[in-house]
Length: 130
Image 1 (cartoon, one colour):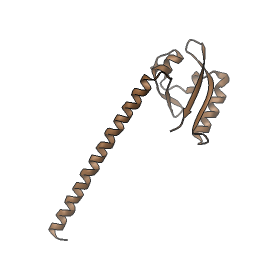
Image 2: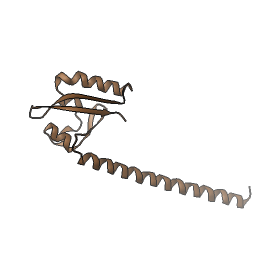
Image 3: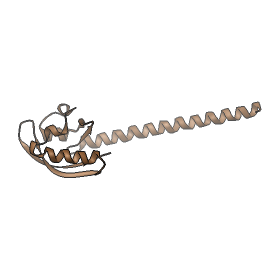
């Protein structure tokens, strides 16, 4: 291979790396913007929203905390079953199992939540799996 050919290959490889970095940077920016938009939507929602990972809440918005009569921080790392009325836990567990097994993409059902003060609230849950 001639020296000129080597230079072209190196130049083309450099161009490809520049494009990849640019694409990667654009993807990262788009991802951050999407995450920011999602967070704003959740935090401003009037509906209670929570995210579960490994059987524990990783996020709960203010509306969810208000529904349960506590601060959002109090919901961090608790099981979603902890605030479901004992008589409704079997239904909630079965719906979780079905989603995790891939048998259902979404579940919609009514359960009772037990608030921090002991009062009971009837709620309709719409649960999805990513």
